[in-house]
Image 1: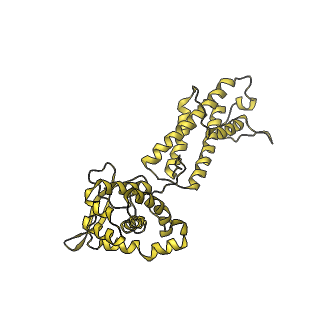
Image 2: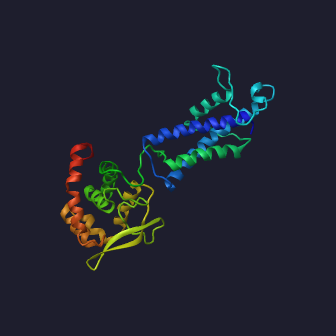
Image 3: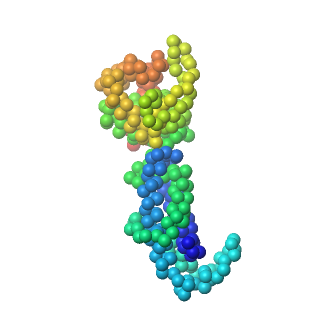
Length: 298
């Protein structure tokens, strides 16, 4: 790849990183997850096609006769460029064109240096995946622990309401159960927001937890179902309940009190006070105060 084309690729890389930063500022999504990697693939393809188009066109059109002399001259590695005052490099104009066209998804044409283009694109995407990406459907998802209860509730309540429509449960029970399992979202690994055991699951994460055995609290390490995001975890929880007949009474309960009793009887957790704790949390001060201060979540 000639010097001019390398400059084009580097300009595109910088602008793509800026676009990624803007997306991340709107709502960071899951880190190091298959979800992020999957959605990044589409971005890789769009960027690669756009870059291939412009770079291939540039390489084919530029000849020793029409490349600016200061580009053709020997270049000392590490030496700064000295563009004419007030002027812009041709590759800068090309990069602006790429930046504008990236979002539109250009049609691909054969490239003369696919390996170099792939390397530049991969670097951009690797940074994006490491920091988080914005879902292509515009929805903001969350991954990992929360710094405070308010942020946790703002993220989980919409997902809990969707799960409630699917299962028939009161959404407050879903939020309460997750709050108990994760300490209001403060202690989360593998986006396991409901502490569902991972027996037979494809994706799991292992961590220590407390179980009640013969009336005593015992610390053990076990595998739990892992998810790409909080939203996936809530949806997975809903499906888990629907797929298991033991939760039939829990799903059919008409009141919070009846639901709590059915949940306890289902054996979801070994804690002999689990149903009572879920009920207290669903009707408790923390959730009620949040709803009072944020009525749009009611």
